[in-house]
Amino acid sequence: MLENLEKKHMTNDPSGLAIETSGLVKVFGETRAVDGVDLAVPSGTVYGVLGPNGAGKTTTVKMLATLLRPDGGEARIFGKDVVRDANAVRSRVSLTGQYASVDEDLTGTENLVLLGRLLGHKPAAARVRAAQLLEAFGLSEAAAKQVKNYSGGMRRRIDIAASILNTPDLLFLDEPTTGLDPRSRNQVWDIVRAVVAQGTTVLLTTQYLDEADQLASRIAVIDHGKVIAEGTKGELKASVGAGSVHLRLRDAAQRAEAVALLETALTGAQVQLEPDPVALTARVGNGDNGSGAAAQAAAALAELARADITVDNFSLGQPSLDEVFLALTDREAGAETQEAAA
Amino acid sequence: MSTATETQTTAKSPSQSGAEDLAPVTTESLAELLVSKERPPQPSPWSASVTFGWRAVLKIKHVPEQLFDVTAFPIMMVLMYTYLFGGALAGSTSDYLQYLLPGILVMSIVMITMYTGVSVNTDIEKGVFDRFRSLPIWRPAVMVGYLLGDMLRYLIASVVMVGVGLIMGFRPDGGVLGVLAGVALLIVFSFAFSWIWTMFGLLLRTEKSVMGVSMMVLFPTTFLSDIFVDPSTMPGWLQAFVNNNPVTHLASAVRELMHGEWPGSDIAWTLGWAGVIVAVFGPITMRLYARK
Image (cartoon, rainbow over all chains, first blue to last red; front, side, top):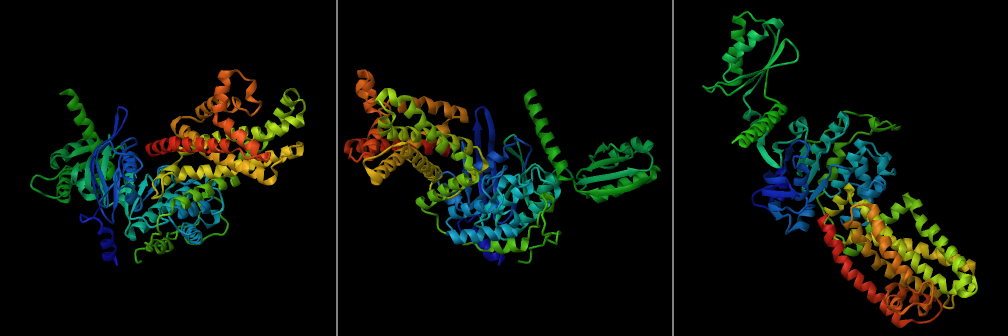
């Protein structure tokens, strides 16, 4: 079954890529909103595009969904060029924009029937499909209400429902959970997982690292219109070090001593003091003799014990995407200042 | 599908009080819906346009107040101009009404065409347009849909005005057929004329500027015509403008049709102008639409 799906999705493009862009550029006046973006998104996966507000995420998505013409570079969706073959692209993608992309004056049912008709369904078929989707999205009771009376979570649902009237091969979700409460957010995540399980490729933009962490298999980090890092979650995390050691000491007075010890015991560690006076975090680098983070941490703990520093609590984790993100954007900022100085 | 999972919230409570009590998303039934990959063929340009026209009708259904401009405004126009000018211009209001009503009908409808521009302008920034533009459909369908919805509004306004006219003593010699022919010609011309406003709706940044520009265009084109008076009393240079104004051709054609005559050349001029306006402003509108 899965093989069949994959095959089906790859028929038009031998590379098996849902999205392929090279040097994509969009300029608004003086601002280079998107400044040379290269992406390669494999079919059947969730690809996260992560970045702060104004990084160029939405502009990139709009170009890929044929809503904006690129000013430079190329983009292909399943092998079809977004400018030359726009209609072929449109027939395979769906877009759920950052703001509700349904008609707020119409009811839930009317919206879905309208879009169903525009996608070529006969009136009866469009009504059946609309009712099924409203049912599956738990919106049956709100079906006859105007969308402007929907809550944030309901809008998101009707929006995504509108995007899967015809099961798309590629679904763009532009910040699908911005402004949602945690429960509605979890439900949107469930929907995304269900959609991907059926073989649809999803390009998800988000400014929430845990969202990318939860859903995406590969992630591109975008800042100032450029991709500053790309890879699997593991790769991105590994790129900023092997992991982080979180420690809680019994005696706050010993913290300075502990910091000194850790800095020598852990190769290239950066020790960070937490707001809590007994807590500290050390980012463990890749050991020079190739030793893993755990081995280094164990050695460091032994050092602390030898110095009679009591450790109440200890944990070793991969760096969170938050740390990755901050490290990457800091590095960018650093590089820029150096450039400016030079 | 083995991957499908049920969300943790189970019991669907029958009374939904708000966002917090939303019925759960049933990912199993969702998965079933997604399995079908069949895609119906792309709708024809006509079918897509009619669907957008249906959207306009639904909006009228949900916000009936927007019919104010096609009901109250035209009634006001008929009453005002008939009783204001009737005695002075034609000796009696009932004589004047026979001349004025077809013209004032033309003026009202041509004036309300500008609302097309206003609604395009207010709608275009909404998220739903991104969705429409990402659909594989005939591109002008969205705009044609607006105009189809507006044609319904023009029809309503025409019915209201002719009705008021009949009550006030308007007696068209052309009978039902003549009146219908006149209204049909007017609606065809208005459909074409509205493309000017779709262009401005897309071109200008605010609703107010759309209204401002449309007034600049509409006042001269409707007043400097033969709607109120016979152009033969005007100075020569003005006659030159008035006699070549498309609204004059339209008003003359509608008036004569309603009074049982066959104004072949005015009908031809009107349809010719309609064709030219669509040919010029249609493509400009679509260019602007693609660029938005």
